[in-house]
Image (cartoon, rainbow, N blue to C red; front, top):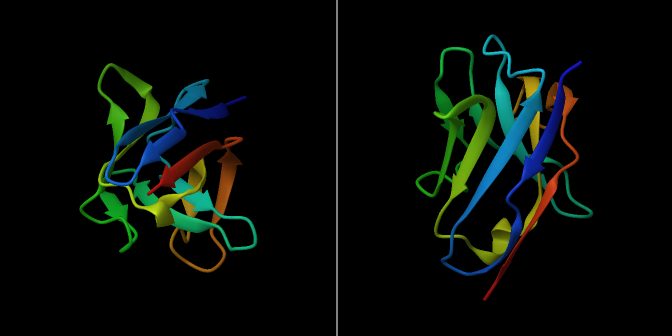
Length: 123
């Protein structure tokens, strides 16, 4: 059974950077789309970035040019999210997920989810 677990969250000031990691026990399956989501209490889950089975990355407009999703070159079972130029509106709980469809739609579906890691950006 594959389990996902995020790490790397924390508190930073506006303009700072964080790198989130998503470790997959049992291995990441490159046949599936992996994605990062974020959620603020009272708001819907928002697709942030995705890496498809072909290694192509896509991003929400709100993070384009600032966030980068990739697999860890040293450990292909780890999905990364490099977040630069952070803004206060990036504050959220961040989740990684596997086997996803409709990442940027109103109701994304993923087969596996991690428990999340909190990111707080203050001015």
